[in-house]
Length: 464
Image (cartoon, rainbow, N blue to C red; front, top):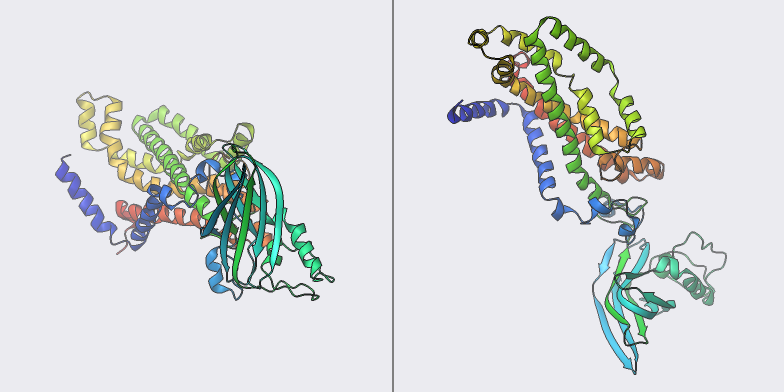
């Protein structure tokens, strides 16, 4: 076939495809997924999501179970947003061999619900005494901690206020006689720091808005001790586009990272299984006789085996791997197009040019792969598009049961974590809806494209 003929065929197909609105919607969604796939490194808020999804230490600076930031637009009480405090003033004082590094971080608090934590980090090496305090808008100063600590080379010193400073903050309330009958076990340290406090009045977590100044002093006693860099992060009650789970992982990053695996699972399974099914069906139709009967009995055996129980058993027996799952799905999915392809092959087998090829001495393999299979390629493409959603759903089901590949980030893995973490009972819809919606959209994308292709390539489905 000449190149001009191929271009004409593609042009004619596109003219027909444009008339099917669902197919165009599918193409738009497919383009969106491909855009995410190619620009994933830029779109990911956390660059090491793919390699450190299970590493809890990578996510420890995030708030746990935080809702999406945009939820503040629909609630009367605005919750604190996670942010990095960049504005700081650095002073260094020397007294002989003793050096004192002082930093001031400014936090403009304008919310109704306090952040969940304040996290200070420093890199360097040696021993350091860290002194932290916070100056409130009402003029009061709360001492948060004073503690000698060691910074190891290549590792960061991390101080989370909520865990290290609660006793100091409670003592501050006691001095003001503000703990009369107040239960403080459920209160976070930040709830107290960012609330109004009055002498001899029982504490209530009413927000005190304004500018807070977080003071950090680091005392270095040896010349070899050093501080290379510092940072202060506010872990809010809301974060990012899709919030976080109970392990502090960013859901948006997980959903984006799962796109490539959904495409790989769906497309690779569809290509392998449909290719095998088309070739098998054509061979069965062309060979005929006892060979056709034997191949049909083998087909019936495979089609009668339920796929999901087999996948569950194989994943439980062997180490769960995405490649094993794809292989097993391909082994059982190939039976889908066999009957249809066989019926088409029986018609093509009777064509004049097939008889002519046989009379000229062409081998069976040449006739099957040179003259018969190419005629079924359009049908194969339509079938592949329709097989993708099923493969994605099966992988999600396996992962939801806890038998998926734990080394990668898939939408099924996120749903499994949500199920085991009690997301539904806790009302954490942002942990469940996004991956479920992503699976639905991916399935709808290829279903729309597949139905459109099938409608164009199969005249029986065309409507006037």
